[in-house]
Length: 291
Image 1 (spheres, rainbow, N blue to C red):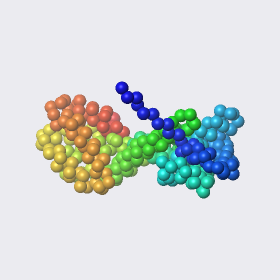
Image 2 (image 1 turned 90 degrees about the vertical axis):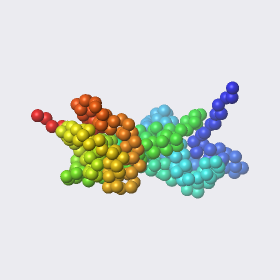
Image 3 (image 1 turned 45 degrees about the vertical axis):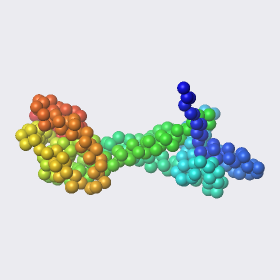
Image 4 (image 1 turned 60 degrees about the horizontal axis):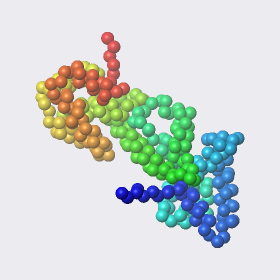
């Protein structure tokens, strides 16, 4: 039985400092970096941890190390050669690397964690809280442990960029809703896209982004009576939507073709199918009519 290979991956700043220690004359450069790191750590402690306790200062130092390391990676340096990170630090300074890393955290925090838009997320306090949470999750780098900040950042960036695309797609669909645009500020992007795909069964290219219960019942009865060609109906929708949203819609279409659409076109009880659409697909994008 072969043992799994374990590779220790320190933060980029640690690798740069190790490369500095191997130089014959390093004292002056080390003093410069130490002074910069100390100043940044104090500022981080004042704003994000606690500058009055040893634990707070230590936590701020670990966050500073990770944020500078994130900045060094974002500077597109050669990760296989620590000297490139060291040269960047000596040429541009640790503060610039920290700013570059922190800028990535702020940009990431501005992207949606879920494909839902609400006034709550626009609150300045909530936005600052989100920055702090990501800062701690991604940048905390202990010397004795593997630093996974880059992997976490890249995974979170990919996830949030997908959510952002969903939001933009749903916003476009809302603006082209049959009848007149939907102008509400709150947006359940998942539900908008789901409704549009399901109601594309009409086959005439119409974009239905908001529904009532009567609309769902009418769609099911019409679809069962006509048994539309699903692929042809979706193609009529796709040609009316910007190309950058096609892959997103087609991915969802492939899923729905084998799930909710099978139930719509089957002999399942209409009330049961309506409830499933309301509970699992329509979300906040269905207008509730109270009798």
